[in-house]
Image (cartoon, rainbow, N blue to C red; front, top):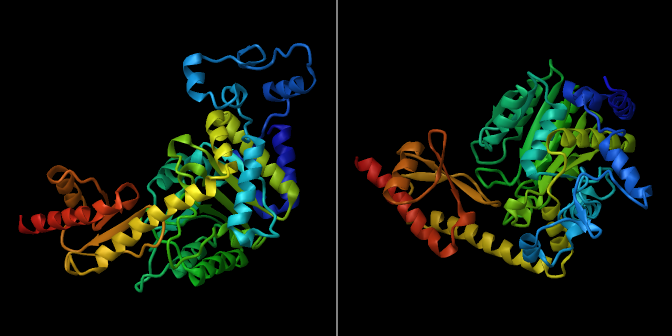
Length: 433
């Protein structure tokens, strides 16, 4: 093992031996080089005042070399904020501003000890980092039966973990915290579990209420008290889009520093929060009361980044940073929030209006995010999906035998009634066939 990796492991072990035990073999072996091209280049940048022949970019007249056909389109920005490599951890100011945003929007983080966010190539990359650092072959990764399919690829296929699902909802359509607890306690013999919490949930658009959130935290705590090391990941992809009757902040704040056997990780980003999907700017943040442990986890995270993408895109980070600092930012974001809330409320009003009866579908609770899910009662979801797309030119997502996901996020409010009319017509067509 590289001595640097050993030093990081010693720091983690000294800070919290349970967190050390959570690391995968790769997580224990990875490190960020202190002696190499990046460190030597950084030293030269600080001290080589005459010539710096270390940087792996081309320069001209003291600035990164660039083409006019590109810079002409981006003339509001200095070339130094676009063309050079961003640091592997991300632009320092962006990290600081995002941390301030997290504290402002998550009151339960006040007084908690957590790391500076590290920039990732959006949220999938952040989840992949978690998988690399903590998921060993055969480890249980726990998440509900209604989930984002990429979890299976990221953890199950890439890291050969075992998926443990539980029903998302109880019979009375509340979050199934008992199911989560049962899934956790099933790992008592192994002594380790990775839990993925995704709120607002993809695909249902559901976020738990306050009491449900407390029950989730209690389930995690109970598992830790039973001797299970829990890596609990808050996948906050759709954070902030809370429309009604739900918690309004991430559970990361409640889970941070909850118990020595609980490592809370937050995965979030500008991707959906700030409506910049193609910019691919995300963040990963760890919580621990031990500063040396946090520093070591950050170094291991940088090692994963260095070994995979080297660093995130510089222009995207610049654009997001400038937006977050802009005086108009809050008002413009609120405007988009209200549009999304209006669409969600319109869908709920349509479904509750009685227009479509109660014999063709029900719907799962939704109060946030981008999506909602119909539970079809009379026709198979995949058969309906194909019929809708080929007969009516309407695209939807079939999930399992009976669930049909509809993204109201990409449909104008005045078009939603027509959309559901078509879904209803499609069902009646198949019933007659």
